[in-house]
Image (cartoon, rainbow, N blue to C red; front, side, top):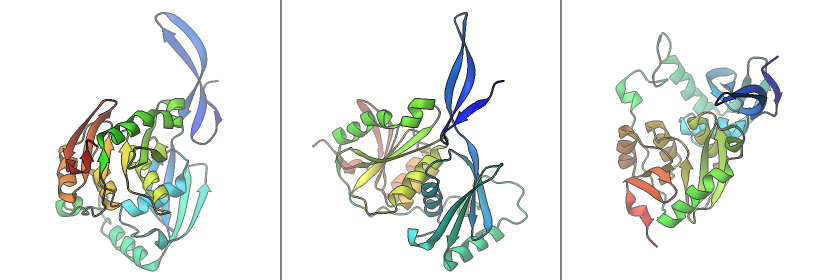
Amino acid sequence: MRGVRVSNGSSAKVSRTVWNAGDISEGSDHVATETAVAMVYNGISHVVMMATPDDLEDFALGFSLSEGILSSPKQLLDYEEVTTDKGIELTLTITAEPFAALKERRRNLVGRTGCGLCGAESLEQAITAPNSITAELTISHKALQRAIAALGGEQQLQQQTGAVHGAAWCNAQGEIQVLREDVGRHNALDKLLGGISKQEQEAGFVLVTSRASYEMVAKTASANIPLLAAVSAPTSLAIELAEQSSLTLVGFSRTGRHVIYTNGHRLTEA
């Protein structure tokens, strides 16, 4: 019988048949785990996302910060994971002020039948004013290339499954300090932001394996991170937001080449 046979949380072992130029072989592969993850704040379920079930505490904290539910990690009082046959509930206990704001946001959704950017009911709410970057950073092109060259070797789950995105925190020398992976590019970035928010970090930048969308730029800017480098292309709105927030946006980050779209003053030859 085919199907998932062994799971270690972030990946699962499955049976498969390979057709290769007329030859057929049987065997197994490791595939990335994808499961429903619900964020529950003070007993109220807020959102359900499909995610890879590891580094979930980082995910919960990073999502809460990047979505503006929390303004500080200190507002998260308690955290618990509850596994059910349907998925995983991340139970967060937060302080009174952000919880009151979250309940007000939820009231705005009552009666809605569709959701593009969830929680937004007008263009003004959907496209909000970006955070302005105040952090200082200067790095060399060589340092950025050092991080780009190292990224693939640090992605253990991607090497095993070929199905996940990665988000890395790199120091000014281009050394990868923290890396998180997930089937969703936003999830991987949220996990990273949650992980690095727990302690003071030296100056650095974020490198992601995905395209640079409006949301990826907004999440990076919300953490006051001055540079986002993406393996794939940026969108027009991402470039516009990066310009407005004084974020340095780099796309097509490949070995030997990268393309600077905004605020290139932070990158130097030295």
